Length: 114
Length: 112
Image 1 (cartoon, rainbow over the protein chains, first blue to last red):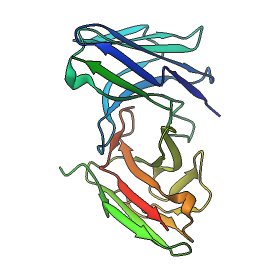
Image 2 (cartoon, each protein chain N blue to C red):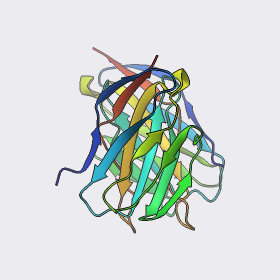
Image 3 (spheres, rainbow over the protein chains, first blue to last red):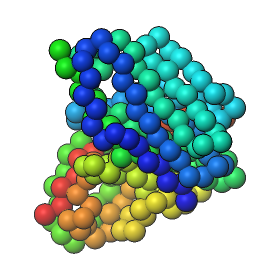
C-alpha cells in the first residue's frame, strides 16, 4: 500500500518568514495530493490540493509543488502569520478501481514566533 | 446543509463493551470513510465505502465493522472495545467525480 513520509515533525519560524513542509510518497499510481490544516481539537481542513497532472498550484500565500519523478510534494507558506500556527498534514490518494481513502503523513507542528 | 455530522462527540467505554459511532452526511456523497487519529500518527484509514451496500477495509480495520445501507449513513461498530482503540475518530465523505474529502467534527473515544 501507499506510504507517506512527512518532514519536519516540528517547524518554528519567525512571523513574516516562509515555511516549507516536505512529503514523499511510495505509490507511483497516487494521483491526488491534498494538504490539511488542523487546529487543536478541530477537524482537518483542506487548505490546498494538487493532482498529478499539475506541477504547481498557488492560492494567495500558500503554494504546493509536485515532482512526480521523485515522488515528492511540498507545501510553501509565505509571509507567515500567527494564525498559521497549527498542525499540517499531507496526504496521497489512489482513488478509482473500487478503492478510496487518503494515506496521511504524520504531521508537522508549525509554530509562528512573534 | 449540515455537511458531515458525527455522534457522540465524546464517549467513555469499559474494555469489552460494544458501541456504534454514528456518521451521516446530507450532501448525497457516494464515498464515505472512517479514520482514526492518534498522537504523532496522523490519520489512518479504518474502512471506506464507495456506495450504498459496498464497503472495504482500509489500513487498520481490525476490531471494527461497518455497513452502508443508505447513501447518508455510515456507522462504525466497535465489537469489543480495547484500550488500544482509544483515539479520535473522524468520518469523511466526498462526491463521485471530485477528490475533496469533507470531514466531520470527530468523536473522542476513551476505552478504560
